[in-house]
Image (tube, rainbow, N blue to C red; front, side):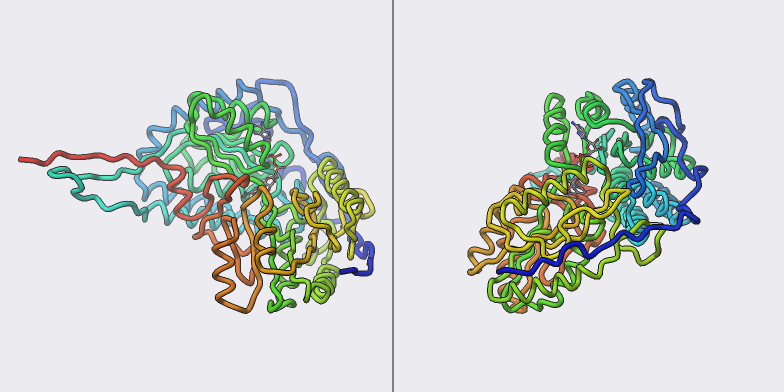
Length: 503
Ligand code: NAD
């Protein structure tokens, strides 16, 4: 398949500078949030927080040390017994109060998130709405847990399953959805009766710190703690800490490996939500327009910095040309810009200079490997880390851009001839987070869903999530379950208590 190159059609719509997202007074207090209050870090180092649209400094944040982590863990340990004993009803009420507090501050939180990440307001608003709903769902689920029925399974012995909190849970979050990914952890971990020490991404700590400030009066001191800083320092200490009972990380596969290694010595539980490279398998009978329209969002939402992004299209050769045309037509209409440039902006910059360079390297390498940019294919005019929404076609099978996570606004289009080939190639990546298949044949849809090696499979859709349903990867994408009642299970331990009732 050969498609004529269209080059970069996008330009960056800039804000006027007249109405900034927020004033400096909206920034959270600096320092770590430990035992219910903000305190200065024990080390002198700070991290510069940068606006990815303008490359300007927003503020400085403490770079935590192992000693800061130890202080936070001590606070979480102190709080764990009392919090673990609160009744589900009480915890539920507190989670609802947190959701209410977030809802009251939703506009400010969305603006703060957009400032720190450069993401469009429509994306930031969706993040905050999802965060609020995470707390609401877990507030309900905490009161309605299910497990095996109590009963007599050995003669004269009554078995009862007790679900207990784990204790102190260490949490490490990424930069792509800073508050949302934190909420996906905090809500079930607190609902299950645990206390938390959380390390946000060193690039995007602002909404997590703001969250701590907003909910400080709602939670007992020590139940929720935040230590900012670098992964190999703060994250590593949390992974290794002998009094942390579980470490939960959302991030890249390499960070997952590091955390699992760190946790091995103390045999602590590990919960990993890692990278993805979701295939989108489009069969010859698919509704091509619907698929292209869906990928306009699913491939490019959050500038493609999305672990479940539909970024790897495998389309039947008989419809490949038509589908690519439809996709390019859709993607060409995406509005790129700063969050201050209007409510209709859909694509923002990448998070950092380092990530921008990584994505541009990927694009250069893909072209060297024979891929063609049917749309986009490079950087957009600065300042800021903007990359054009890109569709790569004529992508040779097995090249790096089809196997490695690019994590930018880039969708690759490959073709296949047979169903068998499509499934084999869809599964031929180390990741197994998400996948979709497009066909109007329901039997084929059911069959393909069972053969795709991914924790979430959509048929005739992509990237639609529900808080009631689990989000969890297979293979190198990790082994934790976020969202749903399964997350509550992951953050709990089950104890079997047997009563001898022989008389
Ligand atoms: P990252 O792995 O670079 O960083 C994630 C977090 O891990 C950060 O807080 C970082 O400081 C920390 N970290 C880094 N090294 C560490 C170490 N040695 N020990 C402990 N912590 C360490 O990931 P990122 O670039 O922030 O986020 C993007 C990645 O996250 C992508 O791979 C993406 O697919 C993945 N992600 C997955 C999901 C999911 O639900 N599966 C969701 C969002 C993002």
